[in-house]
Amino acid sequence: MSLWKQPADLARLNGWSANTLMETLGIRITAVGDDWLAGSMPVDRRTHQPYGLLHGGASVALAETLGSTAAMLTLDPEKELAVGLDINANHVRGVREGTVTGTAKALHIGRTTQVWEIRIENEEGALVCISRITMAVIPARGMGVR
Image (tube, rainbow, N blue to C red; front, side, top):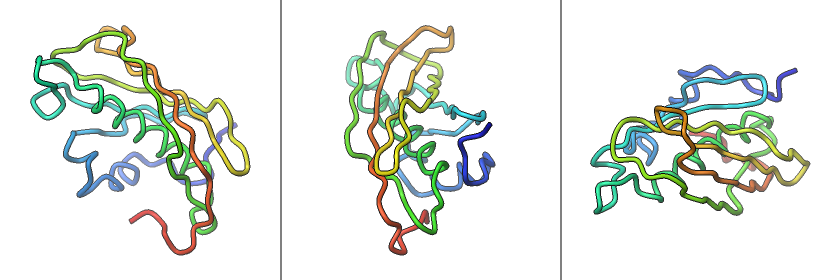
C-alpha cells in the first residue's frame, strides 16, 4: 500500500525544483515506489569542494530534497506542509565524478513530525552518505508548493 496522498508523477515532482537550489545542483527525482523516493545528483564542478570531492553540503542538499519531497507526498497540501526541523549526515566515502543516487524511506510518519532516512550511493552502489531528516508537519495557511 502506498504512503502517498498526492500524485507521485516524476515530471510534477521535478517541476517543483524550477528556479531553486535543486535545479542549480542538478538534483532530479528519478523513481518513486510505494514507500520510497529516489533521486540523483551529478558530481561535478557545481557539487565539488576544493579538493575535487563531492561537497558534504551538496550531499545534505540531496538528502533534504529527497526527504522533504517524500514527506510532502504523504500530506494533503491544502491542509498541511512539511518543513525541515533537523538533518544530520555521515559522509563515509568520497566521490570525484559521476552521479550519486539517494533513496529516502520513512522511519516515522506521525501527526506532527516525520523522520526519513536517506542513503546516498555512488554509481557502484557503495554507501557515500547516510542521512536522517526530521520534518515538522505544519498547517498550510496558503503556503503550498510553488
